[in-house]
Length: 283
Image (tube, rainbow, N blue to C red):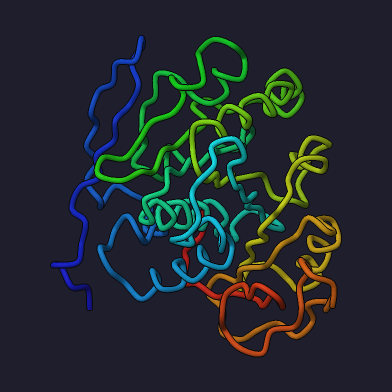
């Protein structure tokens, strides 16, 4: 049963217009994709999963004794074997949770061919998308909007780009990420699926460290293993959505920073990474 007292009835965005001006846009929570759990509920069991995930992914950054350094922002690249594993919703929920720690967080959508964030956030209408900033038609700050009462900022794609036209956009991605590192404490980067054609040379060279999101009832273990192999040493952990049990077939690697077999449903361990669990619907 849903406890209505815990519901977030409205989500308010500050959307850039131009010359540093913004306009407020209010979206009722019922228009949001249900997979954006943290935006729907002020408290829920799933939030505990994301708090643990955040603490294990960014242990130094979330330590009270650690002062943030804008010159070297911490980042995580979120990917999945295929569409439908809950990658985008996981990236949003993780970014929202990180923003509750008084750190400034940027969620950047790099799904230029198949963008989903604006639709998931109630079909937001942006003046400038991230692809506009990367093409030079807008400055980076004009492609970033924020959520009121949080330190979460989002750079979403407004219009899809054909696969063959990605080169001019990706040529400026490193410069945008450098700008982001100078202006935000933590970066959560929503990437294309690792086994898709969109996972091209830029991602193979730059998506490090990577979090692999998979859905137990959606992606066969063989495909998960292919994704693990493709990511190689950049892989920092795996999150299993809607998990009923831990797949025993995931390969074990004793080296730090690789996956080791999981014996329980817990998130990433700092020394021996374990498969995580969270309850998500598909995005």
